[in-house]
Image (cartoon, rainbow, N blue to C red; front, side, top):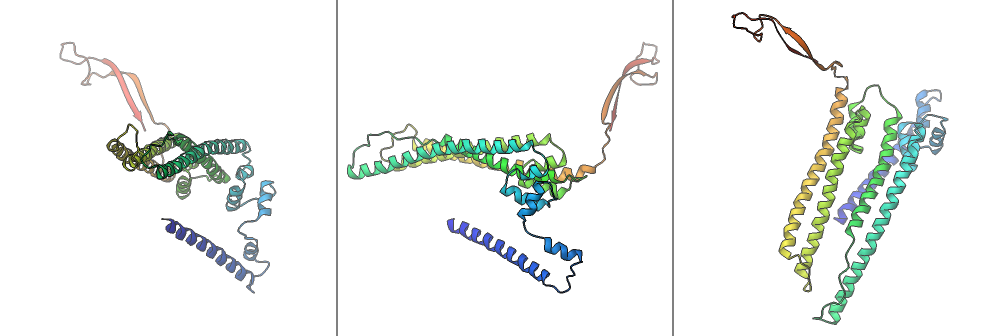
Length: 335
């Protein structure tokens, strides 16, 4: 598995380097063409076309010149909140920096707390193994220290939240860069792929964002909780079957039963998370296409009193054989 990741990493680096080199050679060739008239607008565009210009980027932040969306996005990767400055959404800056700082700082604290308990447990196991080697048949006199998996889970959640705030700031800058009169389905789809709910924001359907985010957070919560319990009972089962001095109340049979149950629940949670994610991508694409779908603004149901004509089958009869005028309600639906 480690070799697989190395191959993938080297492949990505190679392709990226090849792409930059090919683009550089293309530009050099374009500059050296004898038919490139300096007065030609294409030649001027070619010489000005750079991958990224810090001078141009800083000038855009100072609102001295306009930035392309790619330049603004690349600069926002380096400086979080730069796109909000360019779009003049200054009120979002404390939200971005406060969110990233608070979540990352608190997450780092909990992960450090978990790391300390993990080191204590590893040190205990090493000392215990050495004790059994030197004194076989004797019980180790010290209790087993617990690993604070809850702090690990909390810290991981907080770090994920910090990453989402950072990525959300990037996507917010792209969405706010230029608002089209009509949403483009392809762009709405890409936004939803990169950040769930962003396609709905682009389409102007803000009420859907808490629905999808609620579904994603619930499914991810159950995913992490079930995975944590699965790892816990897997570890207990391994200790119960390999450690001769195992003394906990949970038997190996009970541990393996709970291990399999939580593994199945974890897999269900993965499927649920994937379904909610795919659904919000499809929703963004479909409703971007249906943006111009003509539906009357006057969709209503009207209930009002009415006089029933004598020839109506529901009119009252008084035993004379002929229907009389009656009173009732008329229901009308307009769409």
